Image 1 (cartoon, rainbow, N blue to C red):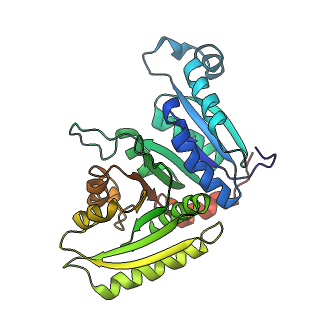
Image 2 (cartoon, rainbow, N blue to C red; image 1 turned 30 degrees about the vertical axis):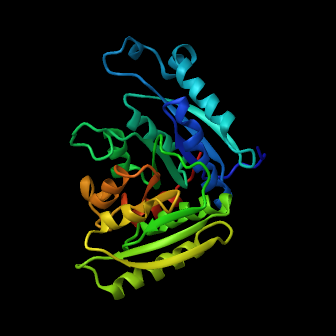
Amino acid sequence: MTGATAERPILVAVANPEHAAQLVRTAGDLARASGSAVRIVSIVVKSHDSPFSVYSDEAIIERYSGRSRDIVDRAVDVAPDDVAVSGELVVSRSVADGILTAVERTDPRALVVGWEDQTRRTNAVLGTTVDRLLERAPCDLYVERIGSEADGVDSILVPVAGGQHVGPAVGVAKAIAARNDATVVLRSVVDPDTDPAAAREFLADAAASLEAAPGPSVRTESLVDEGDDVAERLLEVAGDHDVLVFGATRQGAIHRRLVGSIARTVARRTDRTVILARDGETVGGPIRRRIRRLLPTA
């Protein structure tokens, strides 16, 4: 590990030691590209009806946080050697609240969390914890599906359809490509409702965002494709790539419209690594962000 510590780290939330390597690797790629540190956080949940509620947070961490401490220790152990890494435990009433507390404390450049696909029907889009983070975490957010991890990366697919979430999507794709000497493929699928000229403009904007993203230059390809069903066409080509990175839908709403039906459909039907990227400026807006950056930090 390096001795330097960046002011705004890449925060990664780990809840299971078996998932640590996958999530910390992605956080490390982002940190390396931006010259940041990695901050690992695990949440110790203190429910309202728990007997632990009478203890202070410090006492709970000292006496009862064995598993959470093991998670952080293991995550630190598997972190890349060329970025600064630290860890912390946060006591909270829920995992989502604890992660949001860690975000508030650290003001990270980005937050990396895991998502485990659930086959049962539910009102949640990706899971209640992730849904709350999508709605409320005021930083760039990367949601990586747990369990489907690429064994080597040669090609990264970024489907492009415009909108402000393209920036973080191509940013993480570039960071992963830089570590693996991989190619980033920007692909815009023209369906009957899409103007081909708009698709070409989306690709040009995405290519410009990728070039401006932190990190060394990487190989890129830009493709305009055609298909009657965008999700089905992406599934047809998904096997040609090792990682798929989706920007959240360009509709700025929350809940189902934020994630987007295409990303959900493809993620649940492919065995490739899937990352969903959401821009931090969609939470609270740029004015709130500028005000927060003017405030003194501890």
